[in-house]
Length: 254
Image 1 (cartoon, rainbow, N blue to C red):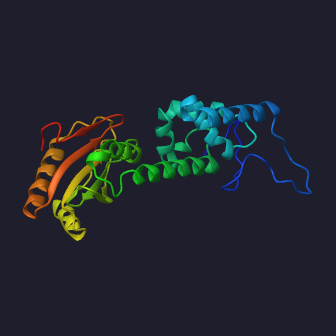
Image 2 (tube, rainbow, N blue to C red; image 1 turned 135 degrees about the vertical axis):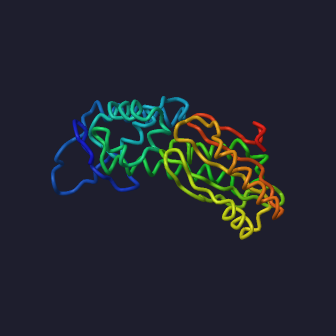
Image 3 (cartoon, rainbow, N blue to C red; image 1 turned 90 degrees about the vertical axis):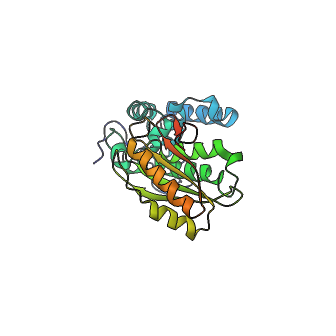
C-alpha cells in the first residue's frame, strides 16, 4: 500500500500538460507561481539542451510533473534515486517496491511504467531485423534496459537467420533471485520452429555480478551440443549485471 506524506497525486489524461481545463466551477487549488516557474525553466532547458543538459533527478522531475501537477516533486525525485540508484533503476523498479517510497501512488507508478515501456520498445526497435554484428552495442543496450534491474532472473533467446539478422527476441523463462529453469530441448525446438540458424542466449544476475555459475556453464554447453546436432550455431551467452555484462564467447567458455 502506498504511503503519502507531503506529496499528493492527481491522475491526468494520458496526453496533456499541467494546465487545467476551464469549467464553470472555481478551481479548488492553484499551482504556486514558484513551482510553475521552475517547471517552465526546466522544460525550456530540456527543449534547448536535451537529456544531456540535465541530471537524472531533473529528468525524473519532468516525468513526475504530470503525475503530481501542483506540488514540488524535487524531494520525491531525489528520494526515488536514493532508493533505486539511478534513473533506469527507478523506472525499472516493480510497482510494489515503488509504492514503498513515501509519496508514490498509482499516478506516479503509471507514469514511470509508461516511460519504461517506451524505452524498451525503442531499444528493441534498434536491433530487430538487423545484423547482430553491426548492431552489437544496440543489442547490449537493449539487454541492459530490459533486464539489468530485474529482481529475479530472466532467460531470453535471440534467434538469427543465415545472415545473422535478428528475427525474434523471446522470453524463455523466469526464475528466482538466483536461478532460472532452462531446458535445452525446448530452446532447440523453438529455434527449429522459427527456422533459425543461430542463437544468442541472455540472462541476468539480480546480484549485479555477471560472473557465471557452474550451472550457467553446464547449461550453456548442453544447449550448444543440442543445437550443433541440429545444425544450429550458438553464437554467445550473455550474462547481464547491473552495470556490465559478460560474454561467454569473449571469456572463452564457448
